[in-house]
Length: 177
Image (cartoon, rainbow, N blue to C red; front, side, top):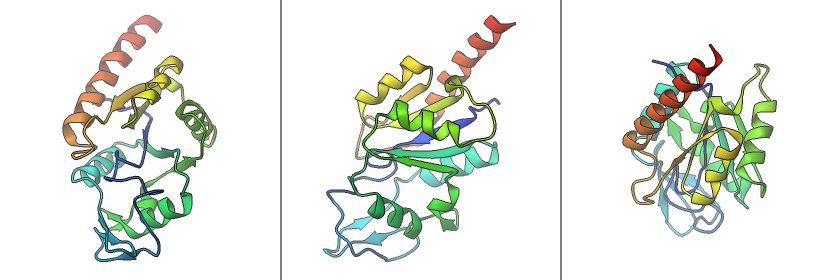
């Protein structure tokens, strides 16, 4: 099976069920490797399928990027250090993080510049809960919408996006031959 070269994940309501800049209040502490607690006792974990999805991407050589408009990058970074995926801090699974108030198009363009390999926008999938970020399709990326904040990123959305990317990539490959 073919995989994109890069998969980009938004954070809030994509990987976890909150906005880390408004719902989380430091200091943060680990309750376990899967649960972080803020100063008011709010408990946060990744959505259920995130670990398996990251594991699949890494097993298939896909670069993983986080792109977020978070206004609290220190909180996001702390969460990624405290929450574990597949036995190690989640931050260790990210090949690059591109955060700030810029558009996701700009986040993705900047992230791709960080890699030595020449990666085209067509080789990227963005998973994001905000429909406005569908504009990444104007530069060639595939947009995968996370439509239910209670469920977040799950295997159904992931597999559907991979299938769409493969179909799109197959058409592109045929045109270039």
